[in-house]
Image 1 (tube, rainbow, N blue to C red):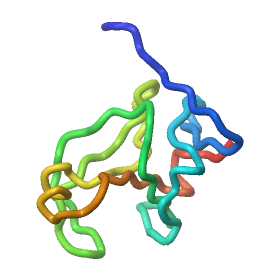
Image 2 (image 1 turned 90 degrees about the vertical axis):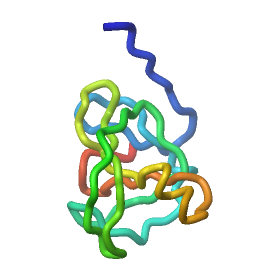
Image 3 (image 1 turned 180 degrees about the vertical axis):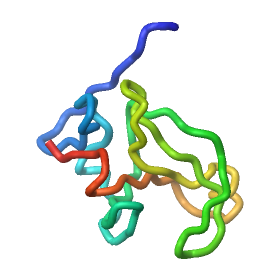
Image 4 (image 1 turned 45 degrees about the vertical axis):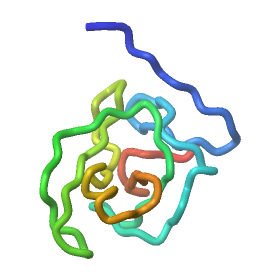
Length: 110
């Protein structure tokens, strides 16, 4: 296995994986806080770092059936949230591809 590259974020408020404390997203990248995740409230980010994507799968969401990918911490492989599959998102003509992270899940604001 190769060397793991970890990107560090700069700012006062940084979301980190609560298991290994690797930076995941900046507070400045929050698009919305009005979403529901698996564990309750969730944040919508326009950018996330130090993540890897799981396989595409069909998932029933409140807006219907969608193709999504789970996102994992690239350091400890804990699930952090999910995102829409890029092909489905672009086919709908939406803007940049956002990421969802559960507020009460594995992302902590430091």
